[in-house]
Length: 210
Image 1 (cartoon, rainbow, N blue to C red):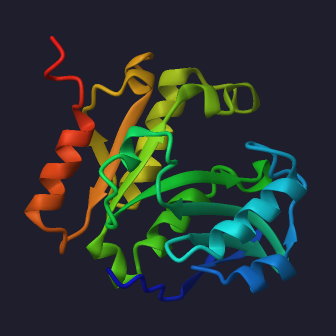
Image 2: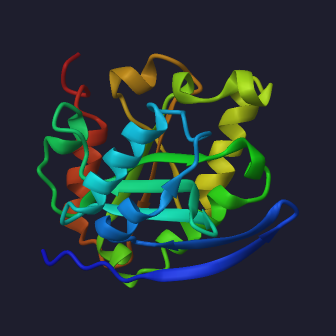
């Protein structure tokens, strides 16, 4: 499978200032940009910036950013699933994971996340992929937002829906460990039925255990 990346961009006007939503961004360009100090959801900002540059350099890696002038204020990542997760067991070239999405507090509530996903899907090559995301409540900023797990889950679902991702059932133990956790996916228009079948088998790996 030939991995192609086609750049797209849009301007988002918000009450707190205008943003450029763009990507996939090349590793070199990402490294040149400043990384906002409030992007702390996954690891310290400098470390996360470095991790994004590394992902952007991978053949399948895609980073879409929200940029205020020269500073990254939000991003979404796409790459092959972690080798330790069940989603990598099928070794599917056409299955990628939306691994992380983050927006600084200043721009939350301004539909930045939705626009990051919409710009991601502007690339026609995404129609060749099954895109998955695993949502775990312990990754959510419940304290910072003051929302409960169900309110946050609703926001996450609406945001993912903007990128065409929908809820899919699974027996994955980590996802099943809490009712607010969920698997969401978008199956591209050109994904063949064999790949869909393979994805279904990955979703329900424990069905023959009982």
